[in-house]
Image (tube, rainbow, N blue to C red; front, side):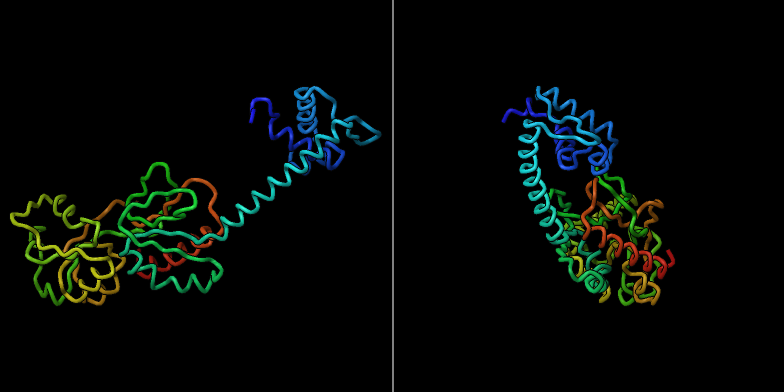
Length: 299
């Protein structure tokens, strides 16, 4: 196909509207531009094609035979384009809403609340992907990611969902009355760590602690880490907001708290551009629920 000789789509669209209404003004209203802009587009199209397409007739316009021939072809072509785009748009709206988040976030915060979203939006099909891996955004794939950090991910749209610090915690039944004052004290306890993460190792490194022996670490899926933590199977590092009720109740002790900058927390991450309607609905819902959580936790 020789694209170089094809008139601009804007000019062809303007002419098709003129052919439909037999008026520059009416075509301009349809296209949300001035009648002068439409007239200029049609004149440019006539110059490029090399033939007259419309002539003035009274207070309106009349198509020339060449103009009628072009209008007929454009109507068929634009009708096919509109039908194709409508099908794609419908398919896009109907495909499942694909959201990825860390397993800890899924189990500790999202899943206890997700039935509320299902009741509000029963027509939206959900595809939840709890994983510690960074999932690539591709067209037709992941719509939204929920990730912990400072929101600095170049090339993506980010919005803070919930502020929270990271804490090193242990069950009261495991720690007892002991008060840990030095970061190296946590080396005395077994560790529970979410698969695919190394939060405790990073925390120790940031505190300048160099273990003299191999660490006693059990790697588990996110939901098993929190269950094991509550049973007293070991200590762990996690977002404080997940365990605030346990901390307030006294069953979980905060051993050390990593005070993050004010912009740290869980973020909504998406590709730049217009969101699909199902994504907008989910974002609106989760922001409302996150605000409720922050109020409950005094954040």
